[in-house]
Image (cartoon, rainbow, N blue to C red; front, side, top):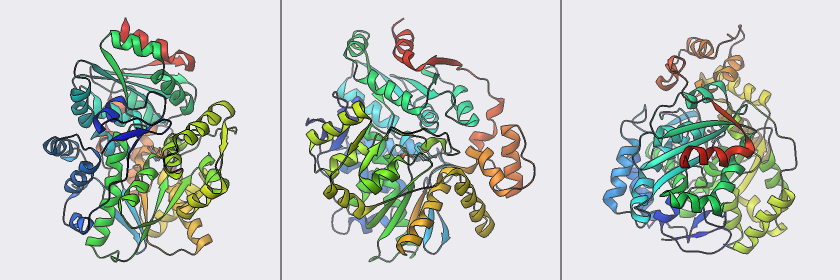
Length: 495
Ligand SMILES: *Cc1c(COP(=O)(O)O)cnc(C)c1O
């Protein structure tokens, strides 16, 4: 199994795809084909634990990683790092609807599932592909990736990490999680701009030849911990497969029944992992792509036109406040049967005109599997309220978007198939929006008082990683213009 680029063909090993992060022409790495589960293999996974399931799936994609190495990586990633034995447990809402809780890791959001594993994969891969280089991870974050990557890479030998976040685009808690990060190899910097500015800045630094030459002369090489890195995608396939295994194991899904997945979506990485799981043979029927008021993906799925020339909104689900959805490029590649020239053309259109359209035929194919919906902050809050009132279950603002959109989907299509909702963050991480949704009394001013109140009102414990946050000293307070990212990096690395 090798990897090729979305914009032009190439042939690289899994190790190189992960170390390099992004293809040299700005395209993303994709596997040459989708590995399939063998006859009876899926059924065998039912009897395994999460780590066993992860090993089987990783082996199929990461062909040049020795088995023992994968075993070691998986053990380091998922043993003792999550506050539940199962890193991705299911919670049943009703007999047909399940929350897949992906927030039991050290940063309380689903990014941990991939970012607890990626640093181990990356250091092994780098030793094979560029043994003489020190790796510099560049991250643009809408809030959750940054912290998850910092947790994963802090004090990992042979790697440094630089994280850029939008000054006003992350929650107070997300910001504090990042600016208090410890570790001798970490650097965190705010930019005056939004997430798309941060992501575009990082991507252009990746494809800057002069910068690459300067990096090389210092014995350094860039890599990415964003979901453009294929090493982020593989671990995410695992939890969809694992969810199916758990539903089968407990008899809540019949072997002949297909299920849907509903995913609160921003950069399209999480939902794309579900697509990969289906291509491998997992019996998923439909992908319900849920957006907040930044509904660019809803419009794309409904019309076939992707148009970023629109207003950008800051919402209560900041990790989905995105207008340039990077991983959609991989979906376009697969939708166009690997036609790199067409993907390159669409990406050029996006860059120059801010919009592109796909053909009617391709749109039809997309719509046969995808359903797109969106909801605003008020409806997300109502979904949180209803879930708590009716079921005493707590969910965060991102997950709530998917809960609401799923309900709309079911009303509109009358599809009654069981559905797994990706529950992407702990409600505590977004407590200032969650508390007023379920509690009619006065909401405290201070973020940590809000967290305490949420715990009191719901009788649920504050996740330990968030509990002590306000006592930690701020270690990173840089804030730069969005045009100064390259200079900032040069200052940090070459001086
Ligand atoms: C990152 C994130 C999302 C969006 O996931 P994508 O893979 O970017 O689509 C949704 N919810 C939360 C809490 C997140 O951190």
